[in-house]
Length: 223
Length: 210
Image 1: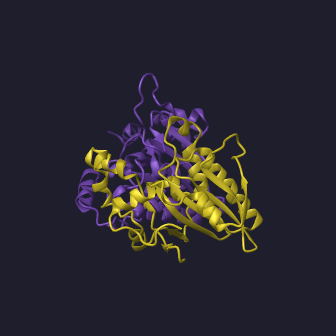
Image 2 (image 1 turned 180 degrees about the vertical axis):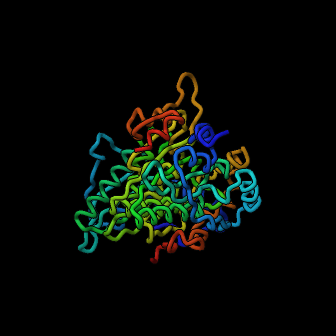
Image 3 (image 1 turned 45 degrees about the vertical axis):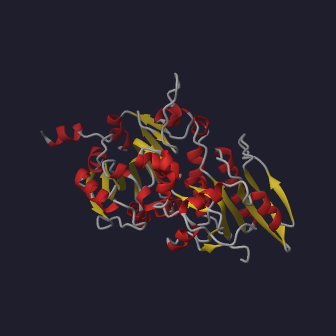
């Protein structure tokens, strides 16, 4: 497969962080790879779950961050890997996001986040939940500096990450079909499909700016 | 107000927080303020009776308050709290929040009304506040809908409170496929006041003496 064919077959809808990044950007150079989870609550079985998550996803954590280019524009990328414990956010993911925002501020680069997550990581308890405040703080700082944040919301984008990282982005693209809500999506009876819990519902009510098929996203991001 | 010491068992914390017998927001507000004036509504068409916001007077000082009433707050509630914080910032008034919710509203109508976006914006407003903010968990600290009202560096809890990243029943449903095992799961969740002190989430446990 040629490089061109390969890049056409990649999709931002993939649960894999690196595939989603390759679908939209070039020249990705990671930072913060040394930031990994600890076990603040001494949660039964957590160490084992982390080990299995690393084996399954090939990643050390549920999100990776780094520098890249989209067209000619240098960006800071935050990409979640849904294969790693459902893209859940604990302290390590919070640290990486804060670091990404800090570098975006320092070097005045656009932040592009590629979100796929079930929300806060239960196994780290309240240490996971306070990441929402740290992200809000990072957000307030980039607002003060005029650094923009574009969010591409993959399937699913829910819970604590929706209400911290995602919903505060300046421009939001939902990938068609993505589950998108604060509460986990619910099975409704009868004809109600619960559109409100999806990308389509968010676009209908103006909580995101645009909804696109996965394959349309790369071109839309290019200037 | 309330009991002087936290319980020994995690599920006791949950039960105390959910009990109608412990003091709720209006009891605290009436006890703390000599007089108060309420603000009402989010100014974009919504009202949440379970998010009490306003200004109270105590010993010559005016303090802005937002207090939850142990209900699932709606988008309007979070937007009203945000309006209150913006007012406090503009008028240079210190802020007091009382946290008590099992969680934010999770019905279809809540998503349609943008509960997630309202919570996100409240988190950002709290993050940029320059006036002093003090927060007290007086009952249920139900995940993001509770933390959105929390001071990032001045959070306290009463012996009747708990704070959890997810409701114990939901945790049990996910982990054990059985919400009835919530009591068992709650022990691992470290949601009691003394756990929260140890984890650095709260500065301390507020007893009747403090």
